[in-house]
Length: 143
Image 1 (cartoon, rainbow, N blue to C red):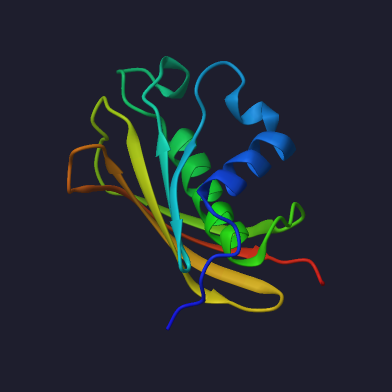
Image 2: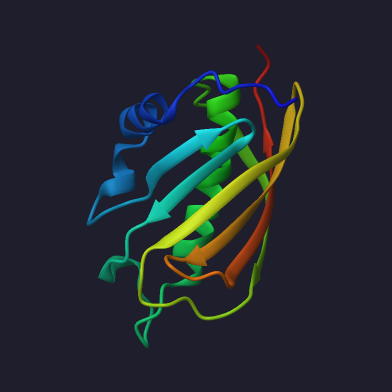
C-alpha cells in the first residue's frame, strides 16, 4: 500500500504561492489539480505566454510543467521542503499539443531519504494521446 500524502492539494498550492510567487507572473501558471499517494496532477492553462511561433505550447512550458508536477508529488509526500532540487530531467516530446490546457500526471517511482525519482505524462485537456513523457530525479535535503 502506498503512503498517504502529508500535504493536501490546498496546502501544496499555498506553499507554492508562498515560496514561488513568480510562477504566476505574466499570466496564469501551473495549477495543482490533485495529489494522491505518490502522485500529483497539475494543469497548465492555455495562455499566450506559453506559446511558440505557430501557436503551439512551447517545449520549455511543458518542461516547467513536468518539473513542478514532480515537485508537487514529492512535497505532498514529504511536506514543505523548499530545498528539494531537480538533479535530472529527461523529455520525450511525442506530438504537438492542442491549443488547450495541458494536464500533467506525475507519479513517484521511488521516494528515498535523499533522492526521489518519478515520471510525468502530459496530455492536452480532453485528449488521450501523450504530448510529452518526462522522467526526473530530485535531491532531497537531509532532515
